Amino acid sequence: MVGQKIGYARVSSVDQDFQIQVDALEKVGCHKIFTEKKSGTSKNGRTELEICLNYLRDGDTLIVTRIDRLARSLRDLQNIVHDLKERGIDIQATEQQINTQTAAGKAFINMLGTFAEFETSIRKERQLEGIAKAKSKGVYKGRKPTARGTTR
Image (cartoon, rainbow, N blue to C red; front, side, top):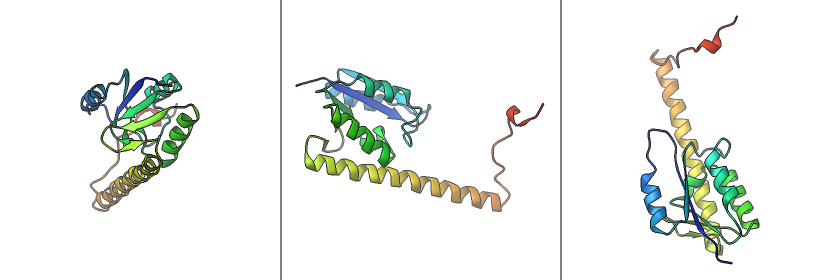
């Protein structure tokens, strides 16, 4: 069964722009494109991703520009791929040779998911090291307290 090409574009923060991703997805013929400005470290709280996944039907292909746009957690990525495969939906990436219809594509998607998760972990470690260094110099004070921190 030949289905539709459905796109998903994601950037991590509100000050980033996903237009380059949208243009690439339009170029490969995506019928509909879902966009989101949320961190990819977890599937939780990503409303547009959930809507996109629910929109897909048997025979459709979910297209992203890069696999890390779909998930930065290997577990989330594997769960998404597994669930879509069970429903007869394939995944492709425009910038990476990924097509879950092939054995090589399935292996490559797991490798990229591992690297995406690793990159997130390394970034977090560097951030924590920087905060520790700033605290030791007395420079880092953390964020300012909010009104929620007060008692009545």
